[in-house]
Image (cartoon, rainbow, N blue to C red; front, side, top):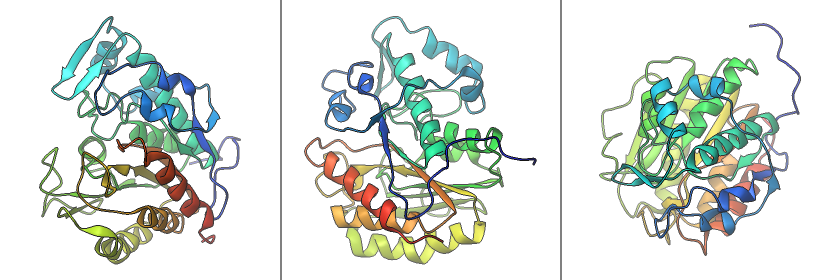
Length: 298
């Protein structure tokens, strides 16, 4: 595929993971008392990144009609039953996607909102406007010349948008561990194929069973795929104290997930998805970061 362009050295397993964000995301895209609200970013900190994803980068994943609709929002708008947008949401979404691209460049953890893994190619869904991790994956392939990308989604909800975008694409492996039955109703038993691995789990699963499934099924699937890059869609709504989920993971469990992910490919990066308990969110981000940073190099 030709030589890769120069860019800042992306993270290898065992490197200290940079937390990348922008304080503007705690001001724009106001959603009131919605669970996905501005305070989620106000309680987090990291290096400020000023980077907007370009329309060319967005259009590798999303339709022109969807991008136009987001661009033209000029006041409070209900995009679906769960998804709110305002006149600043387009900027917030482009900034979130841009920080996800920066995370790929630097092997970092993009602390962004709105989240992305429910967003479909042609519409917003489930708090999500643009699919940040999908945009990051296509960027890695198109501009950084990574051939094979694995996306590992450990949000409490199935990443239906990410799955739909890459279903049938043998250059991207999508793995999702999620509560079942649960929103959005996809990713149930019997929905896996060669490059999609859906692992539905019951409420109350807890660390021991969750990590066993991860090690027994996710690890061999990803290693067998042999990706150049692993992208983690990190949802902290799988935590035991999150108001929107019931999987029952602990801080230690999230740290271990980060450590395992860092052993699965030569490069890794992460993007924030869910997580709605403002008291636990900073600790959980720190736990995943510590896991990513402590893993031995592959």
